[in-house]
Image (cartoon, rainbow, N blue to C red; front, top):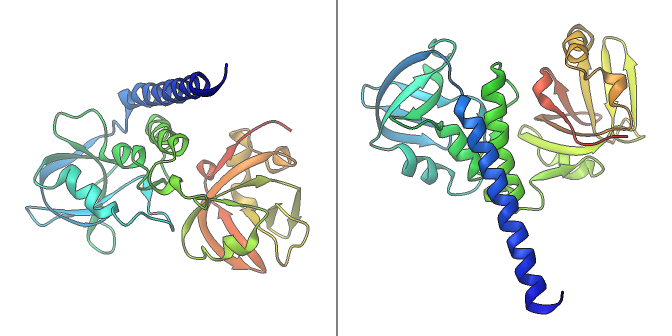
Length: 262
């Protein structure tokens, strides 16, 4: 097969792959963050790419997602187009406001089975957070993010959306930002109460993910014991800091995704 026929076949294959991804995400949405209902209201205005205000004055923060360091310029406009002037329901484990008076919630436009978070993730406007306790919700949001990542939509259209663990300089440029990093764990070392997943051989320069001794049991229970990750390719997400080289502290199991075998 050559020429136009080959290009046509490739296009069909790509379309089929995207269709399957969308179908998979759609199945996950059947249990998309179905948590206890915590209220409702009509959206008066969007504050930013992750927040909005209801007509009764309450400010809502979208739970389960993070703004990316490479956030698209239209993130706020996209959220506004989805929810401004719409009636929404709020779902979550509790409705206690944060210290800024904002209620964190998973949000659904009335009569929709898909959360606003899933819609933003499918468009590549945000990243899945690492602090989602409900497994069905975490799976639904991860599937939605995967659709955008595979189709290179929004933030995923940039070659720098996922940082290479072998490029510590690029990672350092993201200090203070929630970032996704991929690479192979070259070694696992313990120093005091901290375990280091080292992605390079120079600890003063290269990227490492750190796990405190007190939370290692949670990783082991999830089949992600530190030693089992040695020589594995993994995807790590979290806020980048700098202690010698660039670092991400792993506080929750959801921050690690194993990408392949040894």
